[in-house]
Image 1: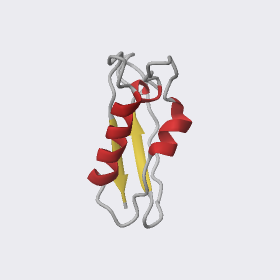
Image 2 (image 1 turned 120 degrees about the horizontal axis):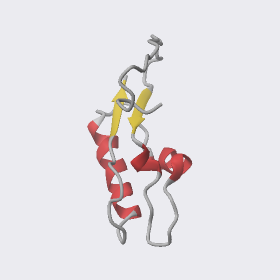
Image 3 (image 1 turned 45 degrees about the vertical axis):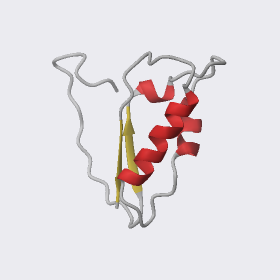
Amino acid sequence: MPLGIVADTGFASETVDLPKDCRVMLYTDGITEAMNGAGERSRQERFAEWLPPARGRYASEPQDELAEKLRQFQTKTGLNDDQTFLIMTG
């Protein structure tokens, strides 16, 4: 659900216990809608495939690897939308 578009929108709150060594990723649609020179979108599935293993690593390491794969994917295209993601590891 988009955030900040409608002032009076209500949002639910939920707490989830996550298992050890799991990771959580939050991202904007500019990540999954990024295009390469052939006009292919990165899509959610491709983005998930790019996500490197996080076990035993700081969140910044897979974050840097993922950002580099995204840069390589869209080498011949310009940035069309914001691209933001956050990886949290446990």
